[in-house]
Image (cartoon, rainbow, N blue to C red; front, side, top):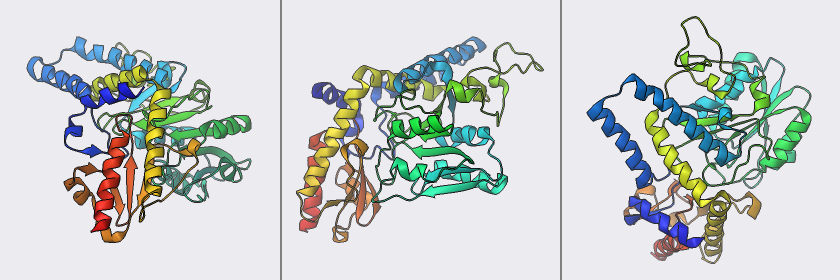
Length: 385
């Protein structure tokens, strides 16, 4: 297993210059995905595009939908729609549920704003209430979410992996409870999709979104959403466009016969550049294997925690149980180290320095224990100064 991930490192030119551990901010684009995207752009620049090629891109989109469905355990590509990013796509869920005054939704206090702002907007516009579970040591148990539910609760929503703590929620436990109680379950998987294994059917998820520019190693400006078949029948249509109909190519001006699959949530043309890149990166994900990818990432994260705990002056900001780790970890260091992202970068390492005493380390499958050793050695040198 280790050899196949070591071979993958050759696809990332950045790794020739840096020890890259900042995948939670932006993922690296592998050379093969870059080649696919630039090849498309070169052809557009030299040959132009006719209507047949434009129509062919919808076939490409359907191919990528099928790959995504396989990656996340969805029923089929018909449950997948594309959008600009996770923030935009999550509005489909929040607004489509049509929550009314007096009803409520449940989230937790460290959820990323891509999820909380939509609910706050509906709190102001529709009079719903937003109930907030409190994290403890960077974690929130499913029971803490369930305790806030009553007969007026419309949805529970979580980020699969929390961007500020690295905590990985037990989606299967939450999803099963929600399904039993008739409550919609929405998930933002931007900090997990492409790294941690997802099975939307086994986890009983109703709606899941992800942007593409982090662990999926794509570009900004394209993301996707999964809509379960049961929710699709009940979800309202907050926005509509020419591509929302059943025959987007031949539909007439006044037909408006809506698509019966998730494509109905797409209003117009899709960012083809991003689709060409995603086809390559998701194909590689499927080739490497979801189980092996997750195991590799968690193995390297465990090694990071082991080395931090052995080093005087360093400590883990959060120490989650193995089943709640995610490849996204936080390390505290002395303020006297004088670290910033610019300083760390100048020393050949890329991490997110979120404060003068804390850094976020984002580990992907191409990372290795040797990368962790370089980071720890650098921190030891700074503390020795």
